[in-house]
Image (tube, rainbow, N blue to C red; front, side, top):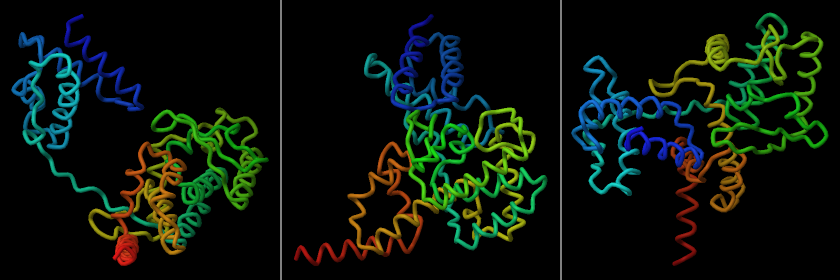
Length: 309
């Protein structure tokens, strides 16, 4: 194994130890090392990294080329600590300006319409599954992937707690739920067991065939439900998405805190923990997505400044 290839293994081990998934990185960095070895290079240079990143050619999307360079940049930054001859390519070499999607914040009426559309699905088990899943997305703030990975044993009926396992950062967390939410989950579980006496998976949510839900299928069904519920894009960047139920939960919580006069900065780590964010700064990003939140934050800041004068 070459020195570069060993360095890649070390780099991936370190990053994964910090909680990063890095699903695309092994393949990309392995391909880069193969390219470097074919060129007779023993370390990373900006010229080499750029040439490799551009290999897919003009037909590739600029975002993909930018990502390829970004992957090598991260590796080069790691390698430079051990090999001063390493050059870290500038991000400006292949900068791609991405427009981040504007969260589609769901009103209570929107969620009711989506759940109503789900009730119209067939067969009956499919309808119950999607109606309950949409409701739980709204009130828990959990990621879609976390909920479809739930097993039956992850619901503590006595304590009213949902245990989220195999999260984005490989950390388990417990979500206390309102009694009404527990009642709704219990009603679904009874109906699920009635309609699917012999499930094919231990998952809490099951498909009409008794298997665990598949993320791509859930996305497709949700897209159909948004159309059936009459939800329409609010702009080019603001379209109803599954993940926006999570945004809605965060923004609703923050709005409630600001309106109640709560010290938001002091409480933010609690919301970050509940939502499974690695850093409270990731939670605070939601401030920038809602004009009312920005206005309330600005007002709170002005009040603080007046007290200090």
